[in-house]
Image (cartoon, rainbow, N blue to C red; front, side, top):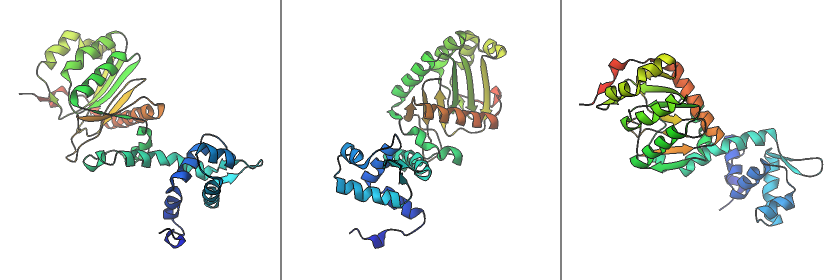
Length: 272
């Protein structure tokens, strides 16, 4: 039953009510790209003029849309701001099953508020598929590789060192409770890791705990969120290449880098 009595008269509930219609959301998304005439908008969205007029009237009355001098429909500044927040809800809604048994860990609120940057991401499943993406990401890096890791992938040290040898800067943050696989020390000696550090081509820091992992370069990136126990889940990750997503990864890395302390090899746990 659709009764106007059910519509909240004020507060944020009234805004969500206006955003509840698919047609109104589609209208706002189109108007975010350019201005439209109502007939043009109705045609593109396959709506009748009656439907389009009724829904547009509501958007205008709610202050999200206004009419320009020539009668064209224009998003107001308020409307543009509201539309910019929709991707966050869209991402969370589409991935509600994932977040039924995963969390955002200790992610600061300012990064949660920008979670819409993940909207264009692909979800990659399975450890082998994920490791292959990491290997591709390392191998295709031209300028830099940055990462925040809770585990040390031994198989990829040589891939990374080959890129560093070619001038790619590598910056990483490890969890101090990360488990180090057997053979890591010998492999690092073999590839001349200490020399890379001395030259400033490799820089590293350490956090007591890592719950949200990320690896990214100048063109692609990935993020792994923790399960309900707070441990990063290496069976599923979000992979993206959009500027918004890469900026999110970069800002998150910089935030964690500022919080991190000096790298202490002695704190890492050795695999028995």
